Length: 386
Image (cartoon, rainbow, N blue to C red; front, side, top):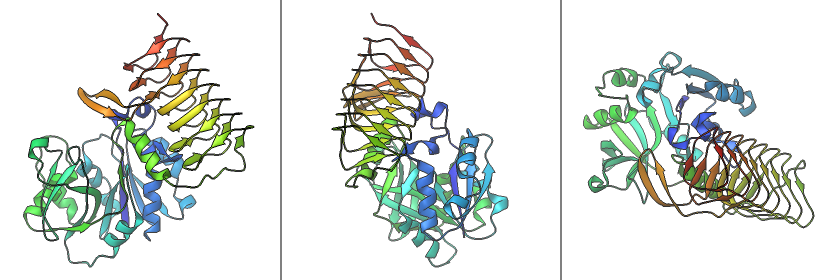
């Protein structure tokens, strides 16, 4: 059985980080989201994978290659234009001959549900994994009767939500599903859930209930919460190539990648991932943060609830005080989210900058020392004090 993993999306709600990389390549615990999904598939006993790629696909293909490093065979199908998840599945058709699984490349689930889907009896039904959540408003709501799915609705209005049962983003199809996708009528993008809803109306979709790990990254602050969730309770592991300065404190629940450097008397607290060759300056305090490779955090910096992009530099004594914050994304205000700030790839912050909660600083932007920044600052901008 092959697994088709959908990894073609751009992820505009995660800009500026997705301006230079596809959403599935965003890191949690110092590894791309997609790598966590691939490993779940491998652990479930599947060794043939089709990655459907599109937006900035070279980042994915150069990282995964033919799959040898993971002990699997990886093929690639290309979705030239992102026209929906159903359209993405169709791109893999010529690589599928039998029953197959479909998973989202940016949604983390346990190998256990992948294994259950692979081993479920072959009765001709389409299978969908379902789980529960306290806030289903941004997700696909699934209606069931027993183990039968009776309907699926993507992101219904809050007042219309009638169930906390959601689509977990894992499916098992028979080859005939490709015809069903093509026959699905839609006014916009062709979502796989539209086909599932039509099949469910004909009694052809069965649910597998799932209570394990289910982690979704839709917004910038999700990177922090997912990263912290995966690190929760984990013992500190310091790679042999990482360096800790004198009197540095690094707690459990922290991930240090190769060649990471934590300066003297710096403090790195739980929920933090420090990428390869990233540097934390002397006396800095870093808590609940995702620091990408080659980033530099200056001495005396206070950094909380923050994502720092690749090769970014945060000047000495800068403060990112942490959330909660109200953040506007695509015209919608998200209130009280846990985001202190985002510093884009290759951005440069001078010394003693003050970053207000919820600030998003674009890639390559320069912020003069002593400035106070707030809101969303575009990429390649220059911010001066005053």
